[in-house]
Image (tube, rainbow, N blue to C red; front, side, top):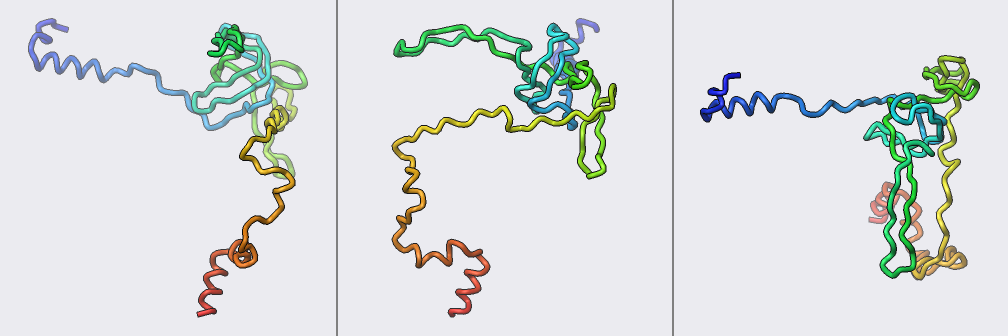
Length: 192
């Protein structure tokens, strides 16, 4: 372009408009078909971690990324506690990998495979390996979950007090507690 164009005010304005119309960021890769779920065995097919296999710990659908156990490990520094009771340390933590860089591992061959979806005679939707034709079962979502710690605090109700009735007018309000709103309003209309 001619440099004299940008010397005037309208030329500078025009130049800004021309430059701002260019896209600075790539559009997000979006998919509504997620073949990989938490608990699946996957292999990285592209990137620095190519060839590494692991179990999916977490699926980040809004970012189109997955966190795989033992893949893309990064060092994280944990600072020491203020009272000095816990020392500082360096831990290894898995970071996310883009969804397009991983493939599901076929359980029969142990190799990465593409997925197709089919319906069984019972009407159940299943994932089928394109290389071997075998059904790949979805892992149970609650299999690897750890139970919450059950520590009783000061404000928690004790187990022996759960079924005791502490509300004084319990019998008076019993019909209102266990009935629907329509039946209570119809009873009020009958009384009037």
